[in-house]
Image 1: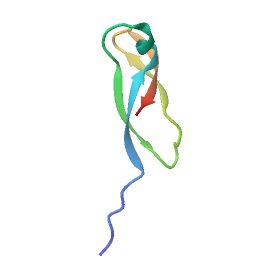
Image 2 (image 1 turned 45 degrees about the horizontal axis):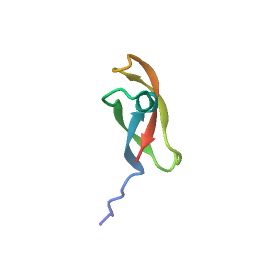
Image 3 (image 1 turned 120 degrees about the vertical axis):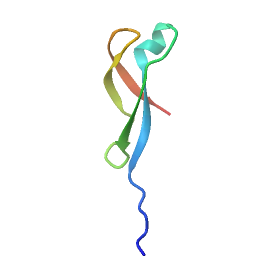
Length: 62
């Protein structure tokens, strides 16, 4: 019988860095997946923030 292999993909949460510093209420968060073997560092992606109404840098949080 074959073993079940757990994948290297994990879910990560991305949170807006600019919004956090601005002091406005609310948060902009996205959930995505990443491959742990290929991407060992924390993700940083430009995503749309609907509260600030512009593209901002979203960083991976733990």
